[in-house]
Length: 224
Ligand SMILES: [Zn+2]
Ligand SMILES: [Zn+2]
Image 1 (tube, rainbow, N blue to C red):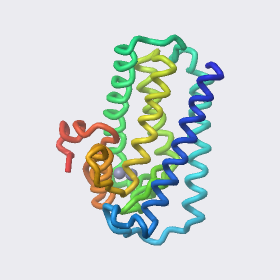
Image 2 (tube, rainbow, N blue to C red):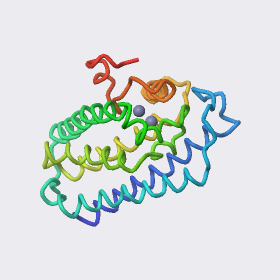
Image 3 (cartoon, helix red, strand yellow):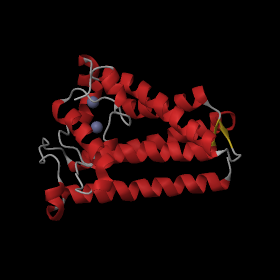
């Protein structure tokens, strides 16, 4: 992989960090409390424990991608610039397949034993904030990123540019859906839709299992 690729990836990681902490600050700020979708209703959670968990999950995520680039990068990513149609097809295809597999994985996580010993950590937050997007049992971090990489391996090779867009969409949507903010402006309709959909999931611990596309839940009768 080229230096430019890793610079672009680092820029996206930096953008994700700024977005995550900006949205978290807004959701916790009294100044923006009128934008909150759900009132804060979380059980007391030691701040130190949350910080350690999210920091370790960040490091773990970077290690997963480092292993992916090292062992599978050359076989599954190409460096040429594809046509706009190919680019669009690669991005949409991988995200659709990933989201379908993630739907199944997430639904499985709601089985009683897996919920109790694994997914329950994330669901302790009934009204999440963006920093909760990575407050997870590491098994889920591995599962979620593993499925994204699996979708690329199954449909690839895809262009390095497609990978960067796929990673950007995957990470930004995950941050947005946990923001608990509704922005009253027509251009934020998709943003607000994602927030409402995932807040229902957090507050009721059921339904709306897909991460990006709503129709997987509609197809399997779990949309709420
Ligand atoms: Zn969540
Ligand atoms: Zn869940």
